[in-house]
Image 1 (cartoon, rainbow, N blue to C red):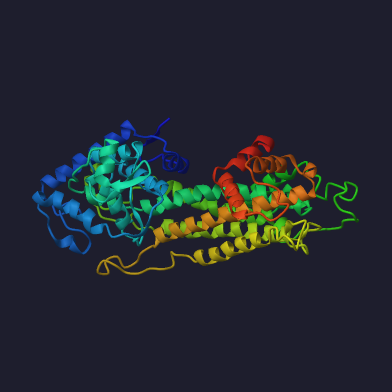
Image 2: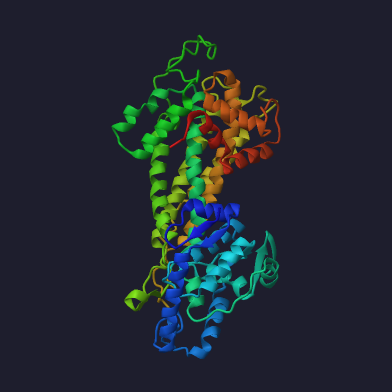
Length: 520
């Protein structure tokens, strides 16, 4: 079923479906009416040749220069050409697709003033396999994502490069193969297409979606590590969470109780000596924070992620270009909705949250591989230590990425640098924040992949017959994917990549939910 956009009801999940899984897109009939109404209003204003910023004037510092109607098309094309100044590696295709979708959704609200046919061109590109080639660096996140969005527009007007079904070629060739006509921009259209927060939102929505899934994965891994550590489930008791009252903490603890239910390894419910899991009387009144405080740590992360989710859900349905037209009020208003400050701060917060998820993952990994902390597991989860090194360097790799994330997590939004002859004297750096958040999220996935392989090793060493049904479901999935028990040293990287793929595809969460029901 196609995703129908109207400028008001697009969801983060919709963005993921279109960007990552190539769901088809349609514009609602109501949205078409909104676009046509706004365009008719713009054309009426143009006919009067009134001095209106961006319609009959130049841009930025050139706002005082009047542009006659005969030069309107040249002005719009020059705007795209001159603003196509981005540098760096190209956007991943899924981010480029999200960029197109989000710009189209903003434009169909009816405040931008483009022709409907121009918006439809973006939808036709999405539905027919064309993605713009957009370098990733060059936005200050203040007057919108000008440079990146200018590159997005290039295929629409037949310049630059684009992807057709994943293959890079000239824009003209890509549009021809897809059967999408190249267009000529009219008054206001170039400005309407490049002024907005859509690049930071394209990076941000995908990074946010992945973080939400990996917050749940953090609960799954935390529960499995609790078992591997012979942990105390009582720390997850709902009474503890209730007297503090944070929803994220309450939800995380509820997940952990579900996930560890039925385990013979959690010693508050079981006699581990009688079960043959330990050889001597086992006395432990509390776990280290990496297990005991999981509801507080991962619950706090959830609270942060929820704030980002709510903000981004609004932003992806916002009109963020300039000027905005209000046909019913007979006004064209030049304002600042293009400024990315709300998104910049949210993306910094998301990066911090994802960095913390990676950090607690590495903490749990260290406790499993360190014989001084693992309650009887062999050093580095290796039964033939000395001759073999087991998971020794796996922990190094995770620690490296966690440390790298600490650098990335420095907030971008606290920076600003003036531009455009000091007209744009405060900028958000929102796109840098969103790009950085995505890098942190990628590192998080790698850390969780290493932990997933390690915890399956640890639980097999404990005796897989003793684990909870939830842990057994994840363990079986990992083994079915081809990741082995490590008896003698093997090349670890290919196995980590298999685990990473499982996490990206959200498969462990789906398997667990078959056993314990929906996770919060």
